[in-house]
Length: 114
Length: 114
Image (tube, rainbow over all chains, first blue to last red; front, top):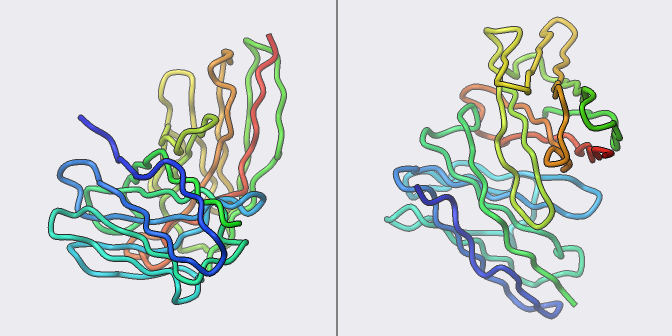
């Protein structure tokens, strides 16, 4: 069974630009979560999508947004990039909605903002 | 919101010895506690989890214990092997509380000395 996949592996952007990151969940999983793993800050919850709807978001500004497509894949958009947005962005999926259920992570997208 | 503290930040043990990583949480409503292993350049891998209706769970060399009264839980790895070297994260969440996703500890860098 294929795991969670993310693309691209690495992304280099300039401050002020926009970044788009993509995630494909495990087949059959309908919930997708996005996390930011910045150096020294650990993993922080960003967004949760289930059945095409944004269910909730963490303590991040509105320039972090995304969507979930009918095939349950998801996209994370970061507008007006700032230097501190440099981090590993991880996507996870679960079979059932809600963080009470097992979440399986992808390998991440390393975003570097210069 | 939930806050998870994890100790130690670095743990070095001799191959074959046991390793223990401890976490405390703040929200008494939390009832799901997964542990993840993250190797360099990879996403976190779910290795074991426990729900609040049990006090201990074991899977081969790995075990997790939960003390709800004291609000702490621990990961125990016995007979450590070189491939156990990685960063380990504990996390907590609440059933029906997908609101905040998983709340992670800051991680423990486990080093297995040959």
